[in-house]
Length: 523
Image (cartoon, rainbow, N blue to C red; front, side):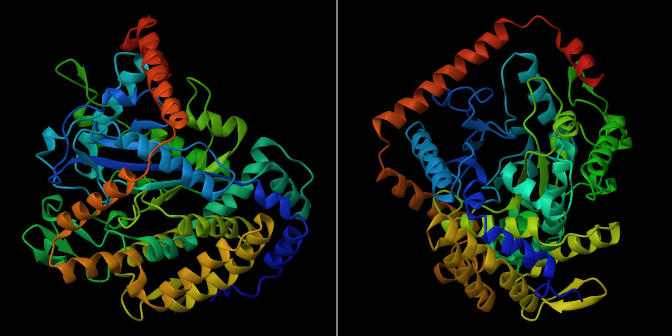
């Protein structure tokens, strides 16, 4: 078994960082929070995205994801965890002033959903890019069903400062520093994230139960709470389990994370390879577009992954082209459940820990990740998602098995020095406190969010939907006590109005037929 604690390479990097603490104040993080709009009874709201929030196509802070009912809040990149949570809080407060007797759903797993065909697919207007986004989502409906696309989560985006990357290159005796070369640090982070992200699922998974109408099969593996709720007693995140984001087509993708080039090649192949089932469906039905193409992936973002290398593309530029041309800009963490006990779906303690965890993944030795090793990492991840709180649970580490408890302790022991450095750099003690809080969860699984959800349900004898609805009410009460400053309210109002005008301009300037647009895109 590979022991984590005694690693000279990592220790050396920690020592160098200790001599360059200002670099640790320059990391950027951003948050994307998805959430469903629901009625006061917990049913999915079927009305269009509120126009008072601006255009879902062009508003950079408030948009939709899969459905008109599935909102997405996007913060700007921030230099501190407290700043990014403050931005997210302001977005929530503004949105609540525009909702008409609606709640923002408090959980990752959906509320009571109507029949599939009644779940509204997001609309983005009549511009070619708006039609493109809509057709892409019609394709998702065909491929995976609308219900699965209503699962929500927290995406945590994280980037390292250029100066830190250069310093790490110097330590590794790398003399060149080109756009594509710099990506190797992020690929190190991604490989280690795959190895160790099961820890995040244990610590922050918050979806051990689900509405019965979401489950169409495999009911026998679940325990029945009542007629409306099923659960797994030791589950941490059903969202990230085999009942969540799954795809038989995508199971054929074998991404290689050894380098940016190998990753790009893997995704490019999936973008260009037809999938028989999708081919049989075709791209049109009754002369209307129903999916962008018939390949394994319609676009790059369709690939379900716990973490993605990202680069903001230029207008009209493909995601893979941006990555290939200019390298990785940041990573997107996609496996985080919404915390139903937090009004924002994430709290400061979690954000502080995530920063330390991601830095650990970047700095710790990260050898090549073979397909067998990746399969093992994925198996560990799914095991923790479904049984993470089971006493004496064991995971695989290479050729050996190890108690999850022992491995978690080893990981925290390695993350703790980074937390201390982050605290010293920022003149706070929040990262250290976040480590202590996670240590407590490892020693007592009843402190995990997933356990707290089930405990509340059993103590109050209420099913999943009533629990989530109760939390919605608590969150609304919390936000009703907070008032946006006139300046911030005016800011979001102006952004909303500007976005509507921007969409209108796009549609007025439309000159190219959508079929020709798609032909150009595909070529």
